[in-house]
Length: 141
Image (cartoon, rainbow, N blue to C red; front, side):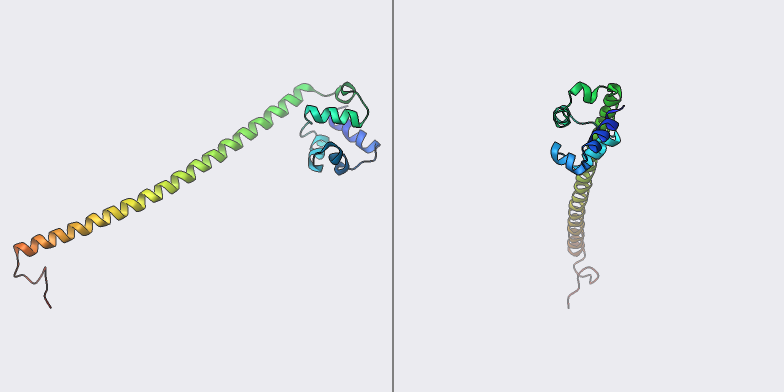
């Protein structure tokens, strides 16, 4: 019998709900549900608590556990967590770069606009100095 099946059987024999067992083990009902579904396994301290609670030795509680399966599930969960962390870090970097690019773009637009206005004013002044009588560049009202 697998650990998850054994845990489900022991819990039902004691007439406990998942929530009640979770309260005894200081975990959520969802955690107990995952243990019973074989999606995760309790850590060592919880295994000791379970063996005490069900008045069994650790060997009796976990004897039929496929250790390789536990390792594979643990490794898979670690990989998923690692991928999730990398994904969050990449999102953060992308958002920071996007904000930085927008800020840089606004700065260059302002600088470019200032340079353009200065050039127009300088050219207007030069044309006025070259052609002081022309009303095209400077109009007097």
